[in-house]
Image 1 (tube, helix red, strand yellow):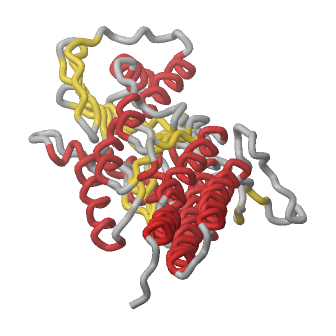
Image 2 (cartoon, rainbow, N blue to C red):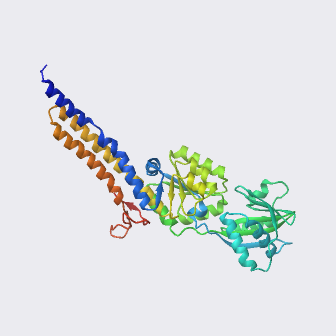
Image 3 (cartoon, rainbow, N blue to C red):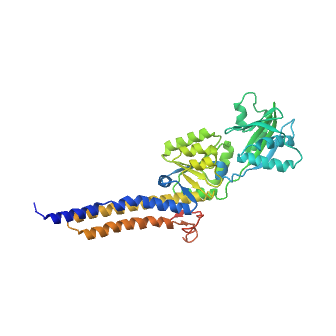
Length: 401
């Protein structure tokens, strides 16, 4: 055993402590997360913390609501079919009077279309005791009679209001044409069927292609609309599957099942009915401008410009953040692994400090690269399509760093 002066042993011990100090290791993750959250904010995406940012980059499945998310959320009235014993004006007047008391996007379409078609010829009747039937429709009292306006399935769930053959035939014809339908009944008789149509967002198909390029394997639409409409929209925008006729609680069950199958899943929505599903998803994503207060409060991520094209940007940024975190951890651990034995065998404390503090600077600078994150547009010769300070990142299939 070699005797060593206390001063030399003390010096060596201090050098080892400096080498083993995990400063770079401790700051490697927070620096990357903060840079990622800051870059997301500059790009118009609000991320509520590091957890959602990291989870977003590990997803392989994303579920979407239809109305207001994959579609414009501005449906228009396209078809009005009055049955025998009722007129189109009568059907529209009752629908207008009741739907004026609802804030659902489909109700707005009915109100706007009915006003345009009636053109002041018919005055809507007085309405009282309006009640929303969650996921199904609306109920009210008009001229002392009970009025029901809602999905065809509503009338199969209530006693003594089953659809007639004429109403069923009219509804089936509209559904086959890709319309979302609402049946109107006043008192003991049906007035007819109303058809509305919402158009997919122009960027939806491109966004789905970009998400697949980023490694998202399953793109699922979960909607309260009938299955035929859901299938038509899914085919148009390029989703892998669609699930229609879902109540809010069924959306929650669908999300839970997806989590069991794939571990992690995101839910993108905008309405009150989407909030429970978003709360049960690994990452809840809300459309910021059009989203309800409940959806925004529940969500982990908000696309503040209501632009679906920001979703690939957010996913790509998250994956770049994860890569930066891994790089930082390897650098910080590698430096510590080299410095500890080096100082034990005689590396002086000055050199240990230089390498130790240098590694801290390196991981911080590496994390700050995320502030310059850019999205590349295919076919643009590799030129960055969105600058680091751009509030609206452009759509892309490949990302940096």
